[in-house]
Every structure is written in C-alpha cells, then in structure tokens.
Amino acid sequence: MAVKIRLLRMGKIRNPQYRIVVADSRTKRDGRAIEYVGIYQPKHDPSVIEVKSERVQYWLSVGAQPSEAVQRILEKTGDWQQFKGLPAPPPLLVAPEKANRQAAYEAEAKAAAGVADTPAKAQTPKKSKADKPADGKTPAAPEVAADRPTDTKAVDPAEPTREAVAEDAKDPAGAGADAS
Image (cartoon, rainbow, N blue to C red; front, side, top):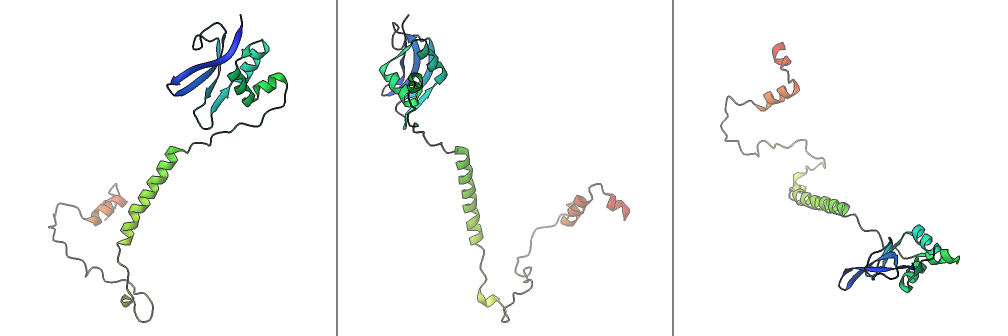
C-alpha cells in the first residue's frame, strides 16, 4: 500500500484550513485518513503550522511520501531537514501573544471607577485666601454646626438613638447594662 502525507482541506469557502494527514494514496483528498499529524492554517498572519514531529519522522522513516505542499511545510518546520540530515532552517515567525481580555477589562473598570471619583473630588469647594487668617496658620476647627440647617424630622421615642446602637455594638451581650 502506498502511503502519502498530504493535506486534507477543511474550513469554509475562501477560508481554507488544512489538516496534515497520513493516508492511502488511492483515497479521495478529503477521504479517510490513517493518522492526523498536524494542522496548517494559511489565512492567519503569520500562518499557523503545527506538526507532530515524532509521528512525521516515523512515517517518513517507514516510506511515506509527502506531497509537494506538505514537503514545503515540513521544510519550514525543520522536519524534512531532520529526516534528510541537513542543517536546520531559520526559526518560524510566531504570532504575538494575545492580550488577556480579563485583565484589560479590569483595568478599564478601575479607570472608570477612578474617573467617577474625580468629579466628586472636583466639586468640593476650594478655600480662598480670604478664609486664611493673617498670621498664615490655618484655623482650628470651623463652626460647621451653625452653617447646617436644622433637622426637622420628628424623633420617635421607641427608636434607639445612635449612641445606644453604638453601645450595643461595643457590648453585644449587654453585660455593660447589667453592671451599671
């Protein structure tokens, strides 16, 4: 039986993708294969070429004949030179690593959160020179309570005050209340 290493076409119209296969020479181009030994995708930049070198070397050693296209691919990967005992070819071009999409998303989210914080900080009023005392020192604590409007909410006597809630948070068992 004559065995060939050839390309099996896959993919869509105008977007070919090939598998490098070992097949009987009498079978159809896209017919049954004995073994799949690699892939070739010529439309990518640079072309994707993946070959199982050990299996290709085995099939070449037992007499399988590569087609012209497969021989050119094997020359680019260095498998043909290894089989023939020739010097290795220059290394193939490798596509750059794809950016991590999750990391890019997180960076954008942080940037957006930083942008959201910036307007809030920008809205705070700046102190003018008139607010500073003549001696150049900053005043101690300004009277803020006088500037605030009074709270017109009715106080519910059954509702606990903030101080009572804070004391309960400090002493959840209520031991402090029994001690007094």
